[in-house]
Image (cartoon, rainbow, N blue to C red; front, side, top):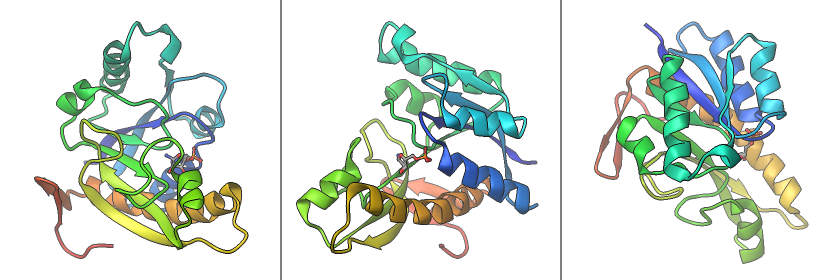
Length: 206
Ligand code: GRF
């Protein structure tokens, strides 16, 4: 039985594509994308889903009266599609606590920095401005705080002399596209559990 997941996107959807490709290539991937949900129309991420026949839903941020209503609308859309877990892949809206209540330890997020450093919407730029020599990628479970939940996996990415936000983000994304499908597969195959802030792996970690 494959885990039915909803992937949430706000932009280009390159991580979504990596998950689509991994699922298509690997019979033991263990997860099936039942819907792709966006907070805005006309984004490449939605086109990527449509191109392979995955149903999409737009839950417009601007039409929700508040964050709780928006969050519940996103969760409703996921549940209506049959999803039992959410995979945030460049989703630029903060979900309220209601999402965690409805999908406890069943929401994954990817962040383009090494949490707890540089949370928020500008993790790449802020790492560069701070002058760190190493940054990277974090995949974590979502809790009620932004970019804060239990860490599942991280990959380090060196900051090179002359890096711009764009060049650094491009190298980070290469690692994201490797890491996220592997974590989704492990989660879908029931290999991850959470005890407090600690993620416990059954079998080998990545
Ligand atoms: C990724 O860098 C991800 O870490 C961040 O937003 C970006 C989304 O990229 N949360 P894409 O839409 O998957 O191409």
